[in-house]
Length: 229
Image (cartoon, rainbow, N blue to C red; front, side):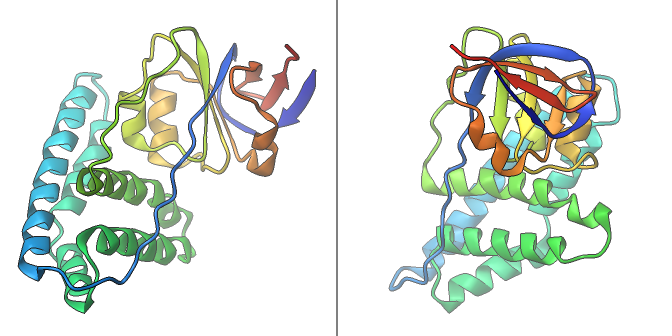
């Protein structure tokens, strides 16, 4: 048995099989030639489609009878931001295709917010990641459905994105262990509203957790026990 520690931000003891959610990294490229008008038309289309998806999550959040739905209102506002659209269009005019422009914009925004002194602004990074992951998936056509375990499991991931909480099978999800994370992030706040045990900031220690390994965790103390097969 191996014991590792992170920062517990949402209480109670729980256990389950480790389900590793690996993030696929995408990089941007400056490529040409392509049809500028078509790229800009597709931008309008993916923003509209993303807005429809966020609206569905917003309604689900409202049904929970708490103020968490306001989180997804900010996602809609980001999608409707005229200045943000101008930034993406400007990159297209510089020679980026739409997919590359979306990835570049996401990375630029994340860097900008992470460099801010206020922790409140730095926690907005997960919202930026959430919105742009949706846009990037729609543009890239990478819309595969994630298949979660049919047994009680603990999600192992880099970060808790807010919309993730409304996409996971809550009846089987026993807890979340996060490589990075902040107790003030919107994803963490949503997890707490649903009483999901969460431990954050495992950093490289998270690599000790293997797929389908039995995991015991205490979301209050931040302790994790990895059991041998």
